[in-house]
Amino acid sequence: PKGFTRRYGNSITARIGVVARDGLDACVYQGTVPPKNATPPKSSKPPKMPGEEYESLQPLPPLEDVVQELPEAPEPLAPASTPETEVPPEAEPATAPPVSDPPDEVPPAPSTT
Image (cartoon, rainbow, N blue to C red; front, side):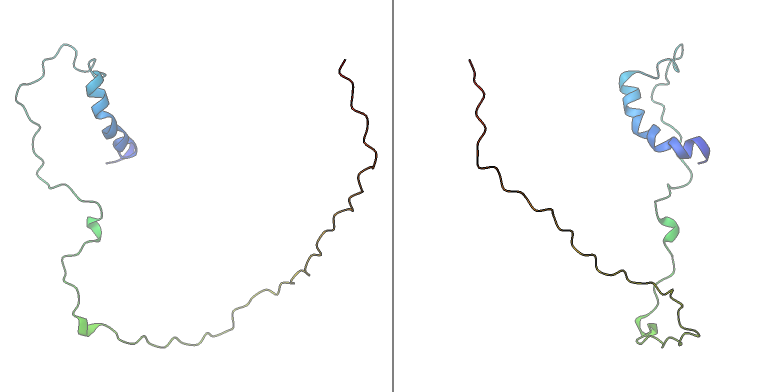
């Protein structure tokens, strides 16, 4: 599939039942009679399964051909260049301003008369 079908195919497929149930496609079939006992023609190719392109018909290699030890890696030609970065000094914790003591006197309550 290409273009519109590829982009919207799953969305269309998911909504086919709703369209049929609610009769939203009636304008397409207006003035025609559906064929009786007619089924769509069968496809000549079997449907392709997702991930089928990764399957292989070749059997797996025998276990005695499996490598037991990994070969040693060659040493690098030049050391990896890493830019030198300066580590920032530890930030000093911020000190909160001192809290003043609450006043000893309590203000008079407002009258409610």
